[in-house]
Image (cartoon, rainbow, N blue to C red; front, side, top):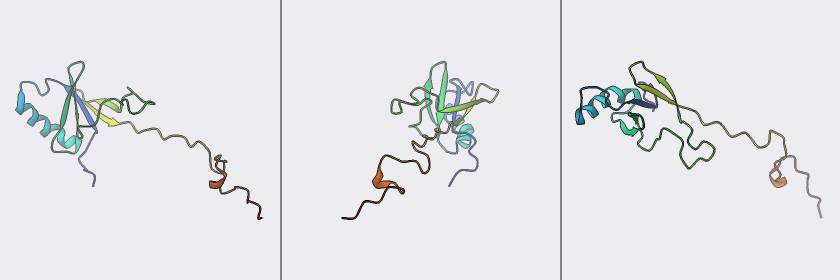
Length: 123
């Protein structure tokens, strides 16, 4: 069941956000603020270049596509919207559907699977 309070799929925030809070208290504050936006009680965080932290619900998610997908390697996985306080909310960019190699009614190159394959002559 989807969490109705979820507002985004990932968050980028300045490493020092929230300011004047350190250590475990920072983690608690981030969980309180960002957990509901991500639809989870515990936010997973990793440091990114430029003094930003990448926050997400699933620790296996990454900000960019990885080596396992050669068509999108290095491309961003999220569309970001600035909240106005240095925090950016990210929404997953849908994977583009692979185009059908053959349109409806087009031959597939496999006559045994084609509906319009010519019938084999009877012996």
